[in-house]
Structures are given as C-alpha cells and as structure tokens.
Length: 165
Image (spheres, rainbow, N blue to C red):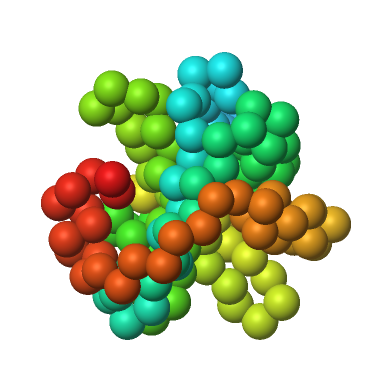
C-alpha cells in the first residue's frame, strides 16, 4: 500500500508540474504578444519610401505632413503580428518598399512593406513580420499616393550607402 501511495504522489506531482509549467509558459508568451514598435509622430521629420524592384530603387516618396505621418504610424502600430520572423535587414522579395523613419540629423530607422496577394506585410528587421489590417490597406495606399514622388532608378545598394537621401 505504501508503494501505491508513493507512486500516486509522484504521478500527481508530475501532472501538477506539467500543468504549472504550461501556465507559466502561456503567461510569458501572452505577455510578449509582440507589437510593431513605431516612433512618435512628433519625433519624425518625414517618412521616405523607396519602391524597390529587382534591387533597383524605382520611385521615392516622401511623406512630410504631420497628419499624414501620424496616420501612417497608427496604421503600422495597429497591424497584426504574424508568426513569421524577420531574419535580415530587408525581406527576401523581388518587389518591396523600404520605409525610412527620418528623425532628422543622421538618425533614422527602417521597416519594409511588401505585398502577398491582397495582403500587405510590414517587415521589422530582425524582429517580426506584421500584417496590415485589411481595413487599413486602402488608406495606407492613399497616404503614400499623396506623398511627394520622384522617379530615381538607382541601385538599392547605392541608396543604402547614401542613407536614403
């Protein structure tokens, strides 16, 4: 009988340990739901977008109106986390849009946008990939369309060397 009680206690302890370990793991994962970090709109001088096709910068768009910058950042911040990880500076895609958050004097950070089917994804380098909410896709396109545009035709490597200027 003593052996049965001991084995029962061991079994109950194992079950309790697995249950508690699962709860701790779920708490830690739930705490870090992952959100797309974006700067404060008042900290930005402008947002520069470079459309890249086959490693060539095709078009440069500058968004510099505070209201447009703010809404652009809100759309980014409201995007949904995916389970994709970002493993490089830019997505491994033939076509994407590099997005530079320009803080002014020599300070900036970037993200990337790319399309898969009807969906638009935001790649935060070395962090995660996020999906723009479907209801925000049209508005994001309109904000970009209202920006100041310039045709550039420059290799993307040269653009990076010049700091998107």
